[in-house]
Length: 113
Image 1 (cartoon, rainbow, N blue to C red):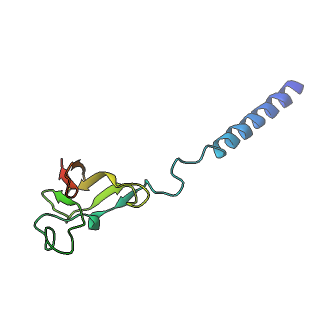
Image 2 (image 1 turned 30 degrees about the vertical axis):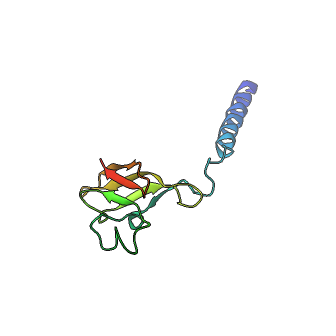
Image 3 (image 1 turned 180 degrees about the horizontal axis):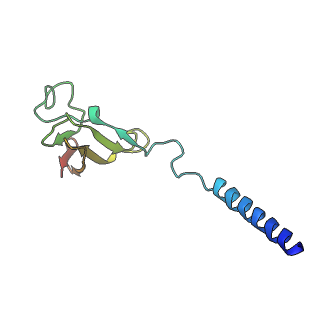
């Protein structure tokens, strides 16, 4: 009888300790969400869009994609504290395709892969 009581108590304590360690896990590396994935479709401009080369949109990165800036684009980074990186664009089947940055001294250019 005593062994059953001790075994039950050990199982209960083990279950409590297992849930307590899971609850006290380390916080995320990005507590403020600066590096979170966000919709950045309005951040890009296609080269043939109005104002892309001369005008109001000259500060935006250029995207070379079969969809231009018409399809959803998601990137990591908030653009202020963390530079925008790891961008993807979704095609008509909602499949993500990588956007690679090409070094350019004038302004960033991203290419659809």
